[in-house]
View 1 (cartoon, rainbow, N blue to C red):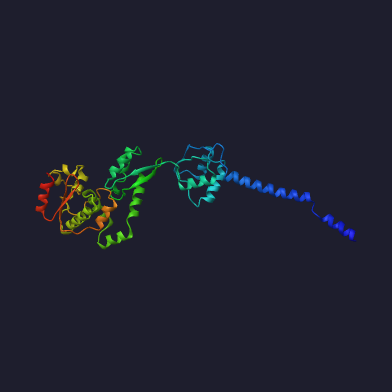
View 2 (cartoon, one colour):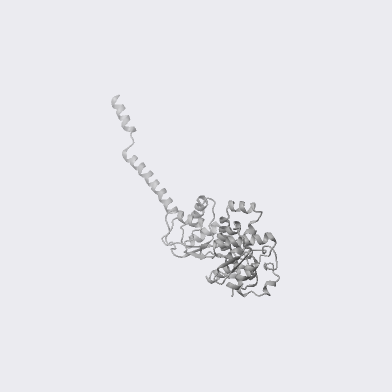
Length: 333
């Protein structure tokens, strides 16, 4: 009996060779799966189009973009990319524009760049000074060779005053009048805090009135302290029913500078002629910076009712009209 039991145990053992074959089978299968996964999702085409421009147009479907990526040697398989992007883009779509890749990218890296609009092109630095008009901004980009001036100022004239002057970095190959206007307007909105809005409301004013006043102040005074005093003078003139008599508003309308104005110009029937019309002009005359906006919100009370600037930009204040005339005689001869 013992001999039969021993024989039975020997017959039921798994032969060592068969166990090794099974282990190698599982290892080979795992390597195959990992290799396939790597090939599909991380390996890049040997002829990846480094340095060439990938142009994604507005309105293209993910399927069309995937086929373009395959045809232009950015990916190995269009169907895999389409599925991968759909699963792992978090609901984002491919951002239209021109892309340049300085090295081969895996499917994961490519998905990230396309979903986030990381174009890989050196940005265009654009510095917009305080007090520029929409028209001046348009000609600035025209001089850079980006787009025609009138494409900007004719389309966005209604944003005068609401485009925040600042230094911007734009994608040089994807910059349009719309992109510039939207970026500058968004920057403006980020500067207006809830505290500022609460103060404006407490004064019984609107943000539009503040921006129009700030645009006048921007053109009338350069120094922050002077701007606060000028702001106080202009708001005081409105309060007592006196014309604002701001040269900058009239020059905005007729295209002359302050020192070119004539007595005839002061009688021009324009809503921007604050000698002939009371109150604020109908719109902003420039795009003011934060100092001018703050001066418009927080004016400085003073005994002055008049001011003038000499050709060097120095401001002279006066309490009475007679003092103002004397300042004209002294500083504007």
